[in-house]
Amino acid sequence: MAIQTVGVIGAGQMGNGIAHVFALAGYDVVLNDISQDALNNALALIDRNLERQVSREKISAEAKREALARISTTLNLPDLGKTDLVIEAATERETVKQAIFEDLVPHLRPETILTSNTSSISITRLASRTDRPEKFMGFHFMNPVPVMQLVELIRGIATDEPTYKALHEVVEKLGKTAASAEDFPAFIVNRILMPMINEAVYTLYEGVGNVKSIDESMKLGANHPMGPLELADFIGLDTCLAIMNVLHDGLADTKYRPCPLLTKYVEAGWLGRKTGRGFYDYRGELPVPTR
Image (cartoon, rainbow, N blue to C red; front, side):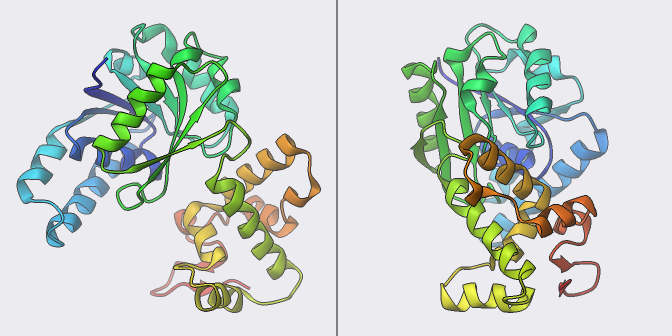
């Protein structure tokens, strides 16, 4: 089946980026969220990010106009039922994702491919809550989606070969690179990245270094473009904690135990850039370390 229309569930950081790259690649996109404000903000952000690409001569002004024209929005989940491919990009909570799939599945065509942008949750388990485990896959984009080149493709135990091949072709059309990952907790990127971030938080928690020294050490000593605590703020500390909990629960190994300080920041509502405070305070002109 040729994929031409794409439904994206969730207009947040990941969802609007996914809508952006699909529309730019020529797909018709239906972007869904439970909040009209979220949809409006997503369209405004996509507009700004496309304009940035125009200003850098990455795309033409005409390509921007055409991409924006390909994106429609809806508050009604059933409106995604006629699309060829659905990408769920809601919050990283399994119960939320399961509820979305249960509400959506009755409205889908039999041939529609259903995917999740989850960064850590079992694809096999999510697929089991649908009527199409053979047409269900993990479709994990990296953040920020318009910039990052990698897409992880994760097959569940029942995913068939035509579904995998169809999504691999989509990744190529987007101009990105696919990496196949087995259905283990956190897959490849976050299986490696999140324990590093968690260890950086432990380093802060134990007083080995402060926020600035930890981030500067990894940027200047390991040539990382962002320090691990800065990166955690960018990802969202609630997402980092959720992934560490999936690793800890799924692999039953104490080396994946979330740092208590990470838990404390999340309990305080200090989730990083999206809330204005995390390991840095973003409410002033420049970010200031909070420890």
